[in-house]
Length: 318
Image (cartoon, rainbow, N blue to C red):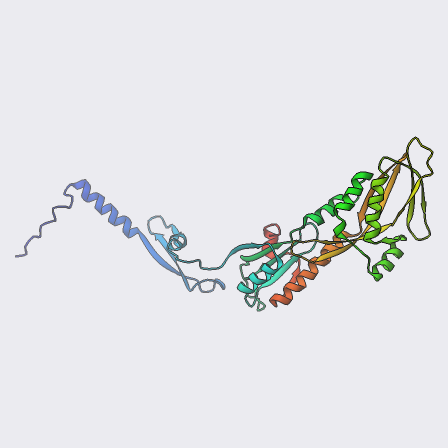
């Protein structure tokens, strides 16, 4: 005769407790982990993916987020690294680059930047996420910012003289080819730094004096004659070159760019306002970005394109 086994003392004996245990057992039986094959669904998927299937409700729940909680390192490299020098951009791209990495350059002001896409689409047409990126936003120097901001801005004589003195280090003598090109283009003489500094100091002398006469000389320069107010003084002439060369470091840790500037003044009654106009300065900055892009290509051996990649377009030119 079979012996009856006694239930452990710690098990509930009431009917309600037994029913609760039975309900838990039924619910446990309703949930199953299934493996769904991915054959025929395209590339980039594992052979099968696990899901949680509830037989009572018919619901299928992805287990990806639950599994990812236990991942001890990222499954892929992603994110945007931002560097502040061109040399660092080259070094970091060399550190991470692969066979399919590529460089994209935005060369139009004001959004001047380089983006290295480490995981770009392969030459064999194999798609990639493009999520691992290195970005270099060309940092404009304070000096370049000042020249751009004041281009075309009329200044009183004393203010203009002070501006020229403050930025004297950014003036350059024209090369022979520049003199020929710009004097033919502007029909005016291109002055040297000495000419411009001398002009600024002469302007300081004539602050508070009135314009008596202005003439254009055969040399392409202009001449302004000043006279002291309320006197019968003969007046003193100031010779003005019509253009000059700005040689300024456009980007932090970058090379200098040479930009021609036209020197202008406006006589208002017997007073005079001065201003300069940078000639095609956006073109010269774009040319410098293109030159730096060539350095990146030479330093990394990666292909480069002017524009924005697919992921960058989706995210507003990242």
